Amino acid sequence: MFFSQAGARPRRWEASQSEHKKWVEVFKACDEENKGYLSREDFKVAVVMLFGYKPSKIEADSVMSSVDPNTSGILLKEFLDIVRKKNEAQLYRNEIRHIFTAFDRHYRGYLTLEDFKKAFKQVAPKLSERIILEVFRNSTTDIFG
Figure 1 (spheres, rainbow, N blue to C red):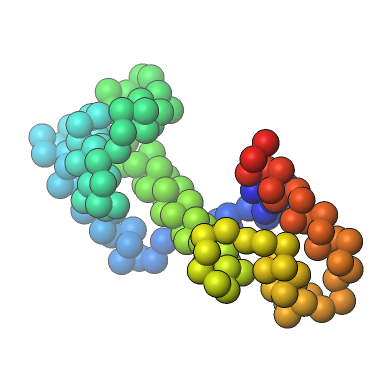
Figure 2 (figure 1 turned 90 degrees about the vertical axis):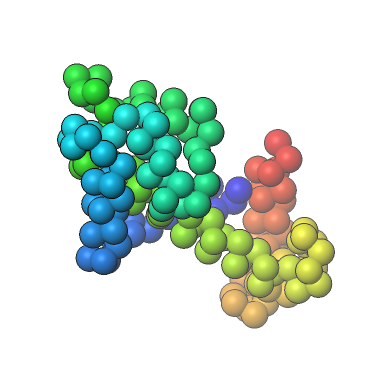
C-alpha cells in the first residue's frame, strides 16, 4: 500500500480512561484464578470480549511467542500494550477504508486513475499529474506485486 512507502504510519493512539479501565476489567475477568496473567485460552476469551472475534491459532501463537518466556502467560502490562496496538491498527484500517471509499465515488470496489485524478484535484489542486500518476502506479504495484 502506498501509504507505508510514503512514510505514513498509524498515529500512536492513547486509550481514554474508560477504555483503559474496561481493558483492565476484561483482563481481571479472564484471569479467573487470579494468577496475575492470562493463559493462551484466557487471552482468546479476552479478545472475544473486546473485539468480538476468536483469534486464529496463528494470532494466538504470535502473541504467546512475544511474551516474556520467564512468565507463564500474558501479564497485565503486556495485555494492555497488545490491546492498545490492536485497537490502533483497527482504527488505522478504518481510516484507510474511509479514504478509499471517498476515492471510490462509483462504489465499484476499486479505484481507476480517473478516480485518483479527481480526488487529488480536490485535495491537492497544485499537485502535478505526473506525481499523481506515480502515486497511482506505486499503489497498484504495492498491491499486485
